[in-house]
Amino acid sequence: MIGLFIGLTTLDFVYLTSSIPQPNQKLVAIDSMTASGGPATNAAVAFQLLGNQARLVSAIGQHPMTPMIRHDLINLELYDLSPQALESPPISSILVTEGTGDRAVISINAQRSQIKQLPDGMDLSEVLKNVDIVLVDGHQMAVSATIAAQAKAQGIPVVMDGGSWKPGFEAVLPFVDYAICSANFVPPNNGQTVFEFLTTFGIPFAAITNGPRPILYYDRGQLGAIEVPRIQAVDTLGAGDIFHGAFCHFILQNTFQEALSNAAIIAAKSCQSFGTRSSFG
Image (cartoon, rainbow, N blue to C red; front, side, top):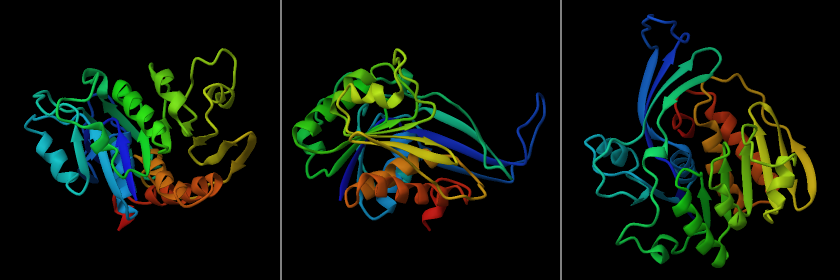
């Protein structure tokens, strides 16, 4: 199966610490790792590690630090939205607290690198060739809307990562088949519930994840909840992104509710070890 993932790529510097440092305090990390990150990127990696082929459409560029990203994503098909850009890629500094798995993140997202259209030489028909599913994370909204519209026209299912509301989502929502949101997704809904808001765009399937709490879902008019595995978290970094990548894998072979349940198992497993890749072996 081939999945197309559109959105943010960051370079993450992640540290496992005993606590969050206080002002003027220095801490020695227990462990550390450097990897590419970002919602669409982490989802693409998870999808690939589950035995599929992932394509990533994102802004990478030619900064001296971008070879680290390219090397980390060497097994993915990369489509660079800013191949000539010399600016630094978005960089994240992340602290993961040992014992709780909580993470603290300082980052710059794609706000400085919004791409309005596909670059010269990037053929949309080639990008979508043989694709089975598309995911957009909202960090490259104009490009996401263009690709999602074409995917919809070709009958390719579109998944939305609704980690938080982002201006411009209105342009993408009419083409979405599966809206997978977090509890932090708060649209300008004029008093509507999230599900009511999403259904005004004709979205037949939606879900709201909320950490260890049950997943709430809307399935073509039916409301329900799915319990998630109970675990002792070591590192929650990227768990939502991994959930989305796993969902893209399972929804191609399962019902909506089965895909949510199976994705929750993969995401829970990812929280039981340090880093966003180690749980896949």
